[in-house]
Image 1: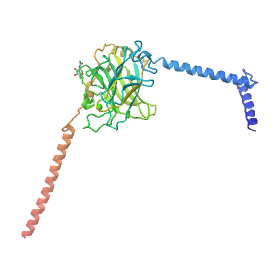
Image 2: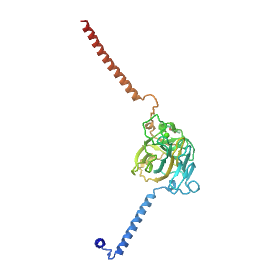
Image 3: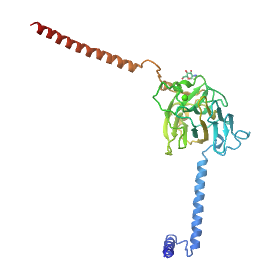
Image 4: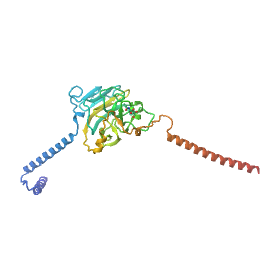
Length: 356
Ligand SMILES: *[C@@H]1O[C@H](CO)[C@@H](O)[C@H](O)[C@H]1NC(C)=O
Ligand SMILES: [Ca+2]
């Protein structure tokens, strides 16, 4: 019964198919299958072509992708390992979940693209409970490479861009932001990263992002074009980017190196980099924009630095707080005075009544 039905359907299908494409008179099932297979192969071919098209924008020479061929031992690799960093088939582990480790991976090729995007796939995980883990990792595009230091395992007073995935709140006096916290800093050689305050005085922007022990894949996206830096995160498995920070008028010289680093102290975590993919962006510019960007930048800077000057008041009151405190004190005294007067006049009246 079922066989009959399917046979009927098939012949009906064959008839309609032949009606649509009279060029291919199909009288045999074999021919139909042959055509279907051809169609399938052709579609797959075009899909493959599309893939190749997307891949064209990926700059392999600047990217760290699986398989990490030769990384760590071959002179032909475009990346170097440092410290405790180790390569496995699935990731580059900057630090294991052990105390006092420091590891990094650095590109060997100076980066010269003008408009670009960096997509970082990373994973921070460990057995420590929340806030008993540390310290996070950093992504770099800096003048110097392969340096040791206190800023997530890299040197302080660095020159260039630092993106921090900070998983441990050091400045525990302030409970006004949730950790892990992702932030951007632009170093110019004199600016210092303040570890005890989680880099707040030098932060250009950032956001909270649940990047530790996540069941989802965690990604960062850094986009730089026309002096605008955009930072986005994708950490909750929705496959969409969430805005994290945007900085205009950011001038970044070329010829710097991509890198990633991490350090653990008393507290630890596994800090893994799965990939760092660099894409070239094709961006149109007006002649004015060309002219505006012609100036050669030698030291990284942000045009309008004042907008980022944060007043982190450790103790004491801010101006606004002081104003309101004063205002309420005056009002309070006024109310007290009025109440006092009323009570006093009542009391006086009562006393007068008693005398009569
Ligand atoms: C770095 O930036 C800070 C803050 O904007 C500034 O005070 C300092 O002079 C800059 N240093 C250099 C070398 O440009
Ligand atoms: Ca921290």
